[in-house]
Image 1 (cartoon, rainbow, N blue to C red):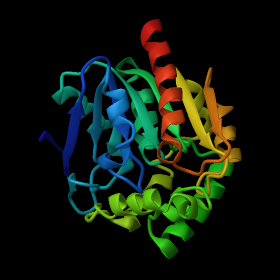
Image 2: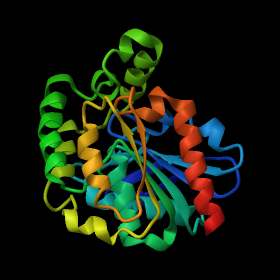
Image 3: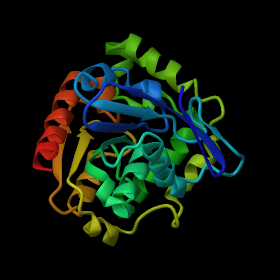
Length: 262
């Protein structure tokens, strides 16, 4: 299985299918396996790259090297290792820090950007307010599906909620305390940076998101030129997991539209 050595880390990734490239960047509650409902569908006619962020899943990270500012470098290293010039990026929660930074720093390598349940690090006041409560919740509960899924999802879909927690539990080297770095001033983007985004962008939002409430994500969307939005009123933070078929269809239509335009 492929690995890439980068400063401070060894990154694990997997590739499925053939065609235009789609990269899946997971959130803090997951790893590459969390995309089990997306890969079989998207890999029918795309090359799908999914990876473990440094310190997640099978990727390893030196102490103190879990730095969100390195995430875009990590992704570019994977793309380079596979000889991929450009790709569509689908980014969940923490993965939005990877995708947005890549799109701002290397727009020529990004066909389009999908931000799922994430502000991508844009420090809108409503996002910073949400961030404070996220920190309190993680300290109390850890990174669990109870926060990452819609209220009541565990009752309606107990098997899926159980699976979410099992996949999250595979992040054995994850330093929870380091997760707070994503909101440090040097790791986030001031609101003015959103106007610099020139990559076609879709923001997917859950109406019952407990981590980044929908009003905070709507506020971020208003800052991004030409952004498209897709709202799922009954979903929580993890639309891709809770309503996979609808999510897949929405993301596929957006990506294919921009592949043809390109």
